[in-house]
Image (cartoon, rainbow, N blue to C red; front, side, top):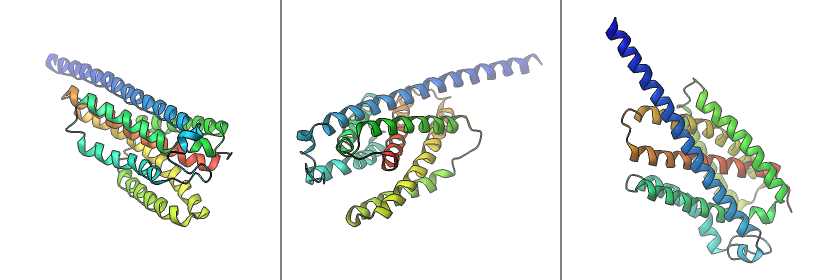
Length: 245
C-alpha cells in the first residue's frame, strides 16, 4: 500500500512538472510568434507607407508587382519549405534568426496593403483577427476532442488555395477571389485550432526526454505555424473587412 501511494505521489509530481513545462513552452511559442508579428507589421508599415520604397517592388500607379515584387511575393513560401528541411541542421539560435528573417520578408511581401486599404480598416481587421485567433487557439489548447484527423484535409485545402490563387492572378476573377477568401478564412481558422493542439501534444509526447535543444527548436517551429495561421487569417479577413483608399 505504501509503495502504491509513493508511486502515485511521484506520478502526481511528474504530471505537475509536465503541466508547468507545457505552460512555459506555450508562453515561449506565443512570445516568439508575437515578436514575429510585430516585426512583420513594422516592416510592412515602413515600406507600405512610403511610395518611394513601395515603388521598388510595385508599379506606383497600378501597384502591380515588378520582377523583384514577384520574387518577394513567393520568397516566404520558399523559405517555409526551406525551414522545414533545414530545422534539424540549424541550432536553436539559428532557427530563431531564420524565423525573424522570414517575418521581415513577409512584411515586405504584404506591405502593399497600406497603399490599398485605409489604416483604420487594417487596424480593425487586425483586432478582429487577434480576437478570433485567441478564441480558436484557446479552444484547440483546451478541447478534449482529438482533432488530429483534420490535418490531412486542411493541408489539402491549403494546397488547393495556393493553386487557385496562382490561377486567379492571371484570370482576375472577383467571384473566384471571393470564394478563395471564404475558404481561406475557414481553412486557417481550422489550422489555428489544429496547430495549437499539435504543439501541445508534441510537447507532452517529448516531455519525458527534456531535450532542451529540441524544446527550443520546437517552440520556434510552433511559433512559425501559428504565425502563418494568423497572417493568412488576417489577409483573408482583410478582403472582406478592408476599406480601400
